[in-house]
Length: 266
Image 1 (cartoon, rainbow, N blue to C red):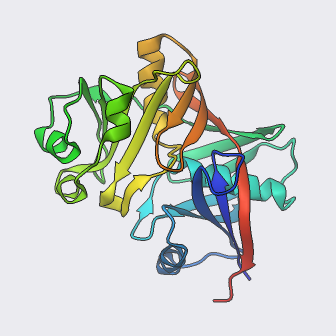
Image 2: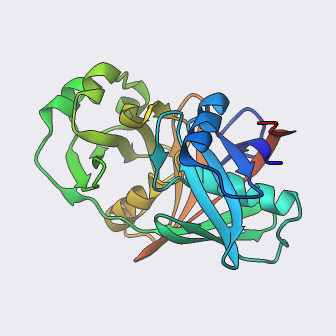
Image 3: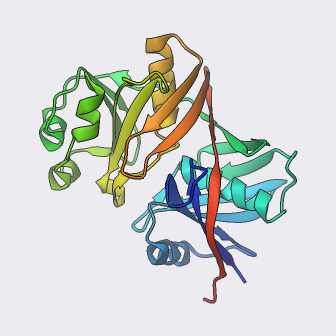
């Protein structure tokens, strides 16, 4: 029988951070079954975990599609494996994913994930995006993806980031699979802030997005000439991500809280 959990990731307080579903499988399941479970959970992502090859197979589904990388649901999955004592606290967990092997380690109450570093390339201003967001960036970057491009837009001030109200229908009509908006932080506590919009995969705004920091960490690491950065995602729920830039990898740190656990009866 599969077990399912809801975990708030990138927070140490319940009802904050980014909620993720984590489903611990005892055998392989069809893709359509996993998609139905993700729809039932109705969260931005639900992770499906199955022991395999000296580690754990890991896949992520939104309520509408499978995605190739998800940070907060990976952190939630590692949290559950340690909390349920399926992994030792001193053990490095290896997740086998469509984005390669992802590693999770634990130090105290903080979980650290090793993810691929992804650099956006400067590109021309995308006017349709600007209209959908109601603001013009000072930088437009793009990361090509076979399922749709990822855009990173830097804006002049933190106030712009916090007050953007996207037109999601217009955003959905663009070629963007996801849009990251960001600025330097006005607070000494953080290096940069961001928000993340992805209506193309069924997520209008994601509360705290680990995978977005695969792009944000090298971008701000280069601009600020820093290897270690503190990031703040300015959604309604909000979250804090500790980022380390290691050239071809980024390490993302955060905490997590289990909200509920249950047996999946179907």
